[in-house]
Image (tube, rainbow, N blue to C red; front, side):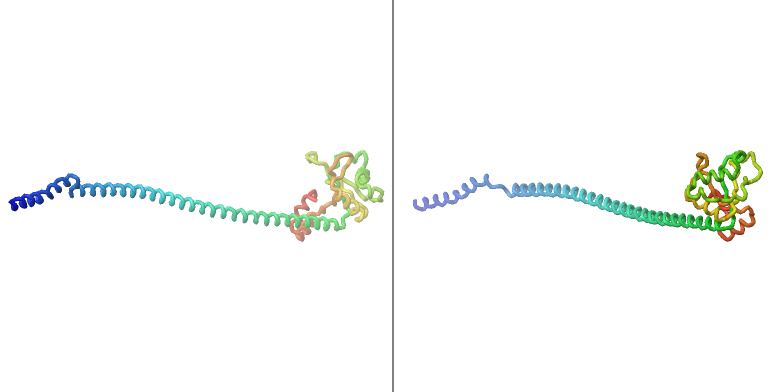
Length: 252
């Protein structure tokens, strides 16, 4: 009897763990489900990584393009700066050349004025006592005489020498023959008795520049030029550039 009881207890003990295991089995995942979950998680993780990698690659590509644009813009700015610098240097050189040309032109003009003054002084020192009056209308001398016209010009324009005793040897028109096609009146040539008288009149006439006769301004008074053309060329050969003034005495 006792053996039967022990056998029954032993049999219950053997059956008891199996029942416990059978009760716990529905709550534990199988190896296959666990693997599936792991694979799913890894797959999702890989997709997320790939997606993030694509996004990162796009952002890097955008950054690279922006960098290229900046580099190109920087290169263009450098090129433009070099061009601006070149233009500034060219402008500076042009300004320097203009200043040099201006200074050279001013020096040339001053030299020309000096030469003209020297030439006038040279011709004035030539022992010719003749004065030339330009612009007096034709025919006036028929009523008054050329000597009286000359005296009126002296009295009306030069108060400091109006009382001087000038002696006139001869007064006439030049050329002697009237040309009806000539647009301007012939010059009046006044031959003074003394060269000093010529100088006394010529100096204030040049200082005044504009001499009037009966209200008509712009009557030049100057030295009569040499009538001998050969002599003119001889003097012009000694003084380069004088030929132009010899041909046109109004340049004085």
